[in-house]
Length: 121
Image (cartoon, rainbow, N blue to C red; front, top):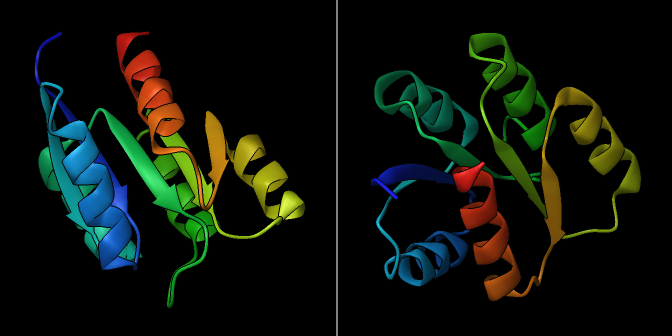
């Protein structure tokens, strides 16, 4: 597998670092964004192969970011992360084209496996 880029969008620094650490054993470049505006800028400049997107963030929420990402490129692969049982938001995200979702605290190995699976497809 050639080096793929994964963008982690989460306002929690700890989550971004955890994901980066876990993915360090794979040939992946992990990009990080703390908010929606940063995420949109990174997507334009770096074209990540997959985006891990938190649902709840200050400012622009995950659904709004997902909408804007899909306007930019509807082939973008996005996996949602949520801390709550927000089934209506998860449904909307799926409708907007999210491939999967993980509820925090998630099993980091499960998340890892799903990211690798999506990057390989």
